[in-house]
Length: 511
Image (cartoon, rainbow, N blue to C red; front, side):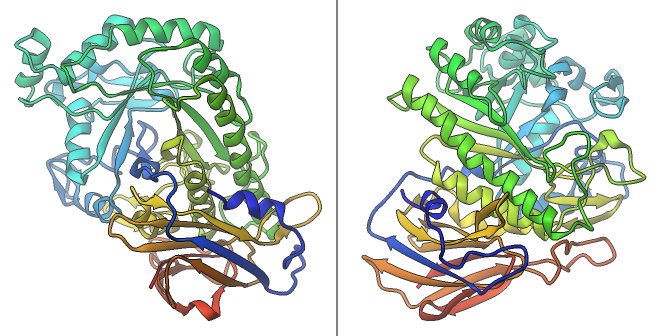
C-alpha cells in the first residue's frame, strides 16, 4: 500500500516554514477496488498500569464509594470506554508487571497484602484491583484482555500457576481456587506478555539472555486446547533493532509477536521533556517530528522480521506509545499525570495513519495510558470526569477497527524548517466492516490550511461526510471547568472542494 511513504518523497507541493506560507496543495489517488492488509482492531488497544490514579479512582472506586459505580467500577468511565469500542486492555504493567505477584490480588480484598509500589511514587498498593477485577472490567467495557506476566522478579512456577488459575477448566486445586473466588468459567486471555522492558526496568538484560529465559518460561505456560493466548516477547524500543534481531532469529516456537516501545518527547531529552501546555510552535513541530520517527523505526524493525521470518508468522506489537511531558507542577512526579491538548490529538491521528501503513505486521498497539496517566483518554478528579482530545480521536477512528486498508498514493509538501520537518498532511483509506469507504486526514501544520484533490479509481463518490476535530489554539484542551473546549464536530464537504483547516483531524465516509 502506498501512502505515507510517498508523502516523505515529494517536495515542493506547498512546502511550509514556521513563518507560514500558502495553503498546502495535496493530491490523493485512491485505488478503491483494491485491498491491502486488514487493520487489526487491536491497534486501538489501551494500557492500564498500577500507576498514579490510573486504576484507583480512574477505574476502581470500590462498591462503597459515593461515586456512581457498578461493583466498584466507575459508571462514567465504563460508559465512556464502551462508546469508543475499546478492543483490548493491557494490564498490570508496564514496569509494575515485573514486581507484581498475582496471588497478592486474589481472595477477599480485606485480606490482601498491602505492598509498596516502588516504581511509581512509593505509594501503598492495596491490591484491591487484581485478577478478577481486571477481567470484570474488560468484560464490562466489551474488551479483550492482554495480561503481562512477571519475568523480572517472578518464577517459572509462579507464571505457570497464574496461567492455570486463569484458564484451567479441570478439577485442579488452582481452578477450584478460582471458582471459590467467584469465577466458575475460565477467563479468556487474548495476549500474554512474558516480561516487560527486559532491557530496562524488567531486569536490565541482554537480549541473548532474555531469549533463554523466554524459551524456558513459555515452555510451561500451558492452557486447555483452544485457550492459548498469543504469547508476546519483550522487545526493544526507539531506534533499537537488536532485540527484534536476536528474538526473531533465536526463538522458533511459542512466540506470536514481539513488543516494542516508543514515546514522543518534544525535546527528546528524558531529563527535560517539555511542557504539556503553554508551548510555542517550535515545540509543536519538535513533538510531531519526534512522533513521526516511529515510521522509520517500524520500517527498520519490520525489515528484520522480513529477513528472519519471511513467512510472516510473527507480529510486531507497539504495546507502549504516546506523548510524555514533564510532570505537572504540584503533583507527585511518579504519578505521570499530564494535561492533554489538541497537539496530543494530532499526534494520535498521525500514529494511527502510520500504524495502518504497516498493518501487515503491526497488529496491536497500546497507548500509554488509559486514564490519568501520560497521554490519557480520560482525566478524573474524584467524582468529576473529562474526555480528552485523544479520546475523541479514538472515537473518530473506530471505523477503522478491522477495516480493510485500501491502497492510495499521496503527494504533499512538508511542514517545518531545514532542521525539522514532517509531511504537511497524512492520510489513511480503508473499507470498514460496514462496507463503507473511509478517509482519514491529518493537517500537521498549525497555521496553514490544506486543499485536497482526490482521484477515485473504481468507485464514484462526491462527498466526504464525517467528523472534524480542531481548535483555535495549539494547546487547546478540556478542563474540569470547561470540559468541551475540544470535541468533534460534523464535517461535510464536496470532494471537488475538499479543504482541511490548520491543525485538524478529519475522518469521513466517501459517498
